[in-house]
Length: 298
Image (tube, rainbow, N blue to C red; front, side, top):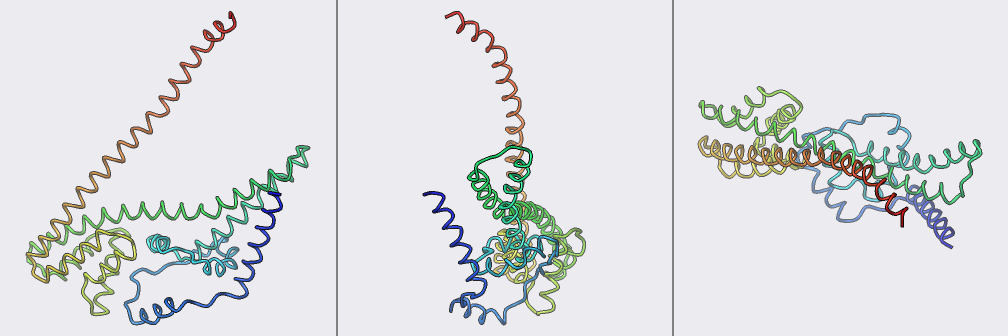
């Protein structure tokens, strides 16, 4: 009974995916209005790059049905922007890994069958479903971990950038000049994105803090959004801007120090786990002969 239900669910899911592929649903009124309203807004400060790997090429036919399911999510889109990857690459990888997870147990079963080892067909079926689910969500976990590492690196660069801007303001430079000079001094991908945002502000004739706020929203950097909002309220006076930058830089350094201490404590606990396991195994090795002798004499 359970097998029939699982087979029926799989067939129904496949038919539904084919229907979505050939007859995509119409966009909702809310999404259409959002697209119309956002036509005149500033362009994103980050351009996604399509890697064009073999997984992207093989999984491209599945991108459209997955988009119809609402994938990727808003958080995944921010993670992809942080990594400068297009949503199509993520969806294609999810589809390829899901299909590979579904087929891998069957291939292993065929190899074992040729070697004389036979399992019931339910075993590769259950393992295949588990591998399919794992392969579908594995790219999401990888993208999230990579994006979090890059966000941490960006926060470190942002703290250094704020200190450079504060020094330039203290030397008598204007707000716009201090922002551009500090961005030119720094090196690395984080400073490159800050320079790109400032260039976008100059070309679109918007305030630098507006494009930096947009950059923070695209990357999911809460500190950059808060900084842009607070400095925008401070106006163009160098003293007020310098005070806001100093306060934000100090807060970011304190937060980074707290995170570093927490990571160090977690690493220390992880290092103690193998020692505890080794000690427990040693106790079992010592106590087992004595316990076996006592129990054998009863």
